[in-house]
Length: 261
Image (cartoon, rainbow, N blue to C red; front, side, top):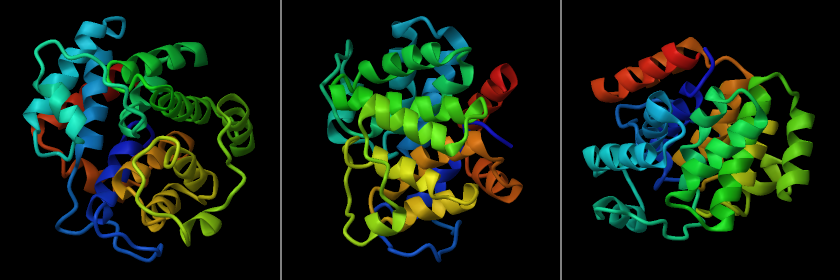
């Protein structure tokens, strides 16, 4: 199974390690405390927008607000919570990785890399209109799109390095020892992409992302979104993730799958 389930699974698996970091790949993928967080909620808000009208910024903002306010305790940052409370919200210059964690549906509906980039930038700019916030979303969506159409890892690495000037030459092992919690796109998106590039399969990618000891759920969602386009998500991981969605989120997931995948 491929698709946005990659981001959702990464989020849920990483949820127990967001504030309880580890520096090992040896951990249980799912526990009784594994839950969806803002990464999943916002990914499905983007999916809902794309199902309704991918050309409309108003529909995009409407869905981000509806989903955000429906799940107020999902784990949003303070500035995004303020944005949700505004009647006519304006972007607030964020450079954080929220733009990258939610972007993967854009790469699944697009018919070209150019369309994927346009949708990704639109999805980010309504909140994360800082250049680094947009860059993180574009780098992630490009990687997902290229993986989706069959590009190999070296093609993806070269594209992201050249276009976005991210250093992807490091390994997970090199990063892990000194890495710490970082919510910036600049300090988490390249590392998340490396977790995919160093991964042997979907599960290994997620274990890489969690083992960095950083913003585990978001980095696993970003890495998982790319891995979920490159490899099939194992049935047991997909099942355990889907099982943790409520009916509202599950219905959006099913609608998106039926319409685009």
